[in-house]
Length: 512
Image (cartoon, rainbow, N blue to C red; front, side):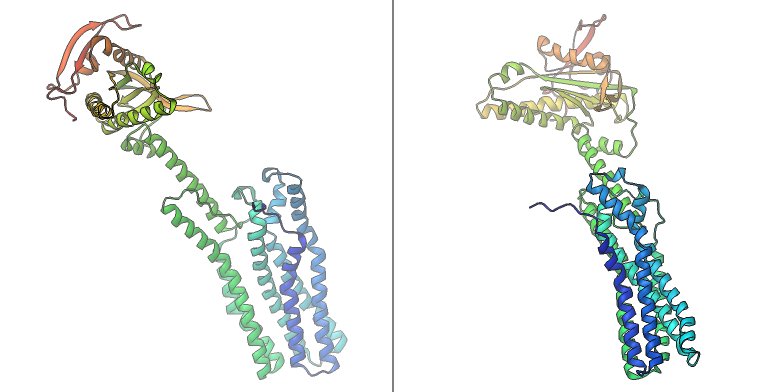
């Protein structure tokens, strides 16, 4: 059964998480008063007055935080109506993903206000007979307000990370959230201040009120230990959880997995790291895809140069050598084979021929049925026009010799041998990304390509497997066994072309 998509939490979920720390600490304060003070009317009444004021503060918070949650309600309704993240109000997005900030500040403000207002109320009601105790109680309330605000902040931060961010930051686009980014140092400072400053002050205020008795000491120690653990857990989780998740995903990428993504769960440093990591992995995945794609028609060395940015793939005129090969009589041959047999035969044949091209620093421009168009010298040269031409001739010899081995295997299998023609020509051509906006290929065009194709067409008529033009022959090694043939006319060319035949099995032909 498919898991349902994540949904934004209802406002009452936020309210519960927001009120819980304040209510707990309010009753902690009341419980401590009952433990410390004798049940006389003044102090007991004062204590419950303080608790009541704190409760009123909570109710006041409920009223004031309604506008803050309105953005969450609107966003929730818009998504339920079919809205996309791109169409949501940016201001609602900002408020919904950073709710924990103003709500925690609101808690702190109300606790401080309650602590200040309680002093004149208590003095008016009970006089100044024990003003020091009243001031200590106010300080105690202020300290507990700080602890309540910190606990509220990180509790709501977790709610945001696991209930709000998976919906509103599902696409990882933090650029749509116009809000200040929280920094790691802020969490560290908060932890240090809570444990190093507010903890001791709170402890002192509690014990001064209760005169430091054993029961009071145990009570205060237990409460502060629990508060410290909660605050530390909240802060450390906020830092360690995304850091650990990011580290695990980095290890996966290091091991070659480019499908991993880390969720963006907060509008802070770790959110930016997660977003940047995902963009980086997408870039690496695209690079790997390009590497595999280029690797299908380029040698690995050439592919690395292109991906490394060392090669300009825009249109340019280059002097290069083109090799064109074709299986003779393939159409007639394929008519006697089933489609799966045709595909299997072509794959085996092309696999062997492409290896020859790659082994000699060539690029497979394209397959045209059973024909192969390979280029030597584009997009990069192996060392100049002469070196590229020699690589093309060595490739032609290797292809011929590889075909002989394939035919030997076919003969042993009781199958008829096949014959190919190879035409090689050197000259200027245009190389670059050519196509439409929807489909673009790096390819070569020009008269040099056409001449190589027509030279290959002449192989059957002249009874040679490998033919090359005079332009290519000029760059051939002196000891290469070339046989000069007569000049022939090629279609659509006014001037005849001098051809040379190359016997791949003759002494000095190389590869083997």
